[in-house]
Length: 354
Ligand SMILES: *Cc1c(COP(=O)(O)O)cnc(C)c1O
Image (cartoon, rainbow, N blue to C red; front, top):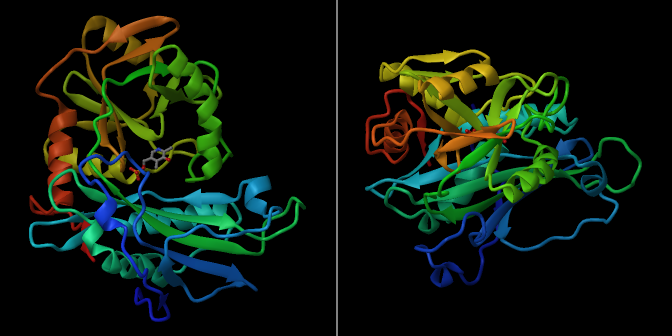
């Protein structure tokens, strides 16, 4: 595979912002590094990518992204080990998923030397922004938007691919109580739920706002047709522990194929934690909560890695989960992050040096 970014034109920022950043008190996704990568698609081809100072840019008000929502993204992280080497975690998975999202939204695929090669070149320039120490990381946000002008409802012929970087600390979200969706849906069969499309997020904001007003932080999404199957927790995949077995739904047109989810499934198998990938019914989780066999629920995604859920509401009744020191969530998070930070041997070959 050719990941050499041969044609990247680099314009360096004259001054770095890094001295003014308080790395101890970062809120997620608010601060960006000195440089960004941009690459234009026009006349049926990707042009040469450029790395330049992070800055706003102009697009025509009639650009298709504003009117028809042709916009996709990825979320990844870079980590620094004790020897100052910078590592990515399964970047090929994000690359493949990005192009699947692109295809679903009738957008052009991005070549590997631009996505992976461009990312490595950008990270090389921003190495200082990747801080050592467990919990510190550099959040990577590749995205693509339709920049072609004209309000006719048809796919754009011009696109912009970009990568921006944001320093992050491990975040503790506080207690997460969730509500199981009985009416709203984030995705439907035949829709774009399996793509990392911007529109999937805007579709979630209103129902999530209603949940927040009732004192819940997130929604557990159910299948749109029957609302009987548990599918995702907010913008994360979701796992349930009944007795000592983990359950998670198979990916589908409604469920995003998360890198964290698939890594947890493989890691749990290695650690002899039984995992069953099969549809998870609302009724069985309610029954398990009632008879005391439901031990844990947690969300899984790149930003928070694993996010424990302390209770859920269904049909107006609240079910509290038991509090335990000894959870699969804590054990799997520790083992997974140790691999990401090169503190444990990567027996899977998941980590890639920048
Ligand atoms: C990004 C995302 C996830 C998590 O995917 P990771 O690859 O683990 O970060 C899960 N669900 C949805 C809806 C997402 O957008």
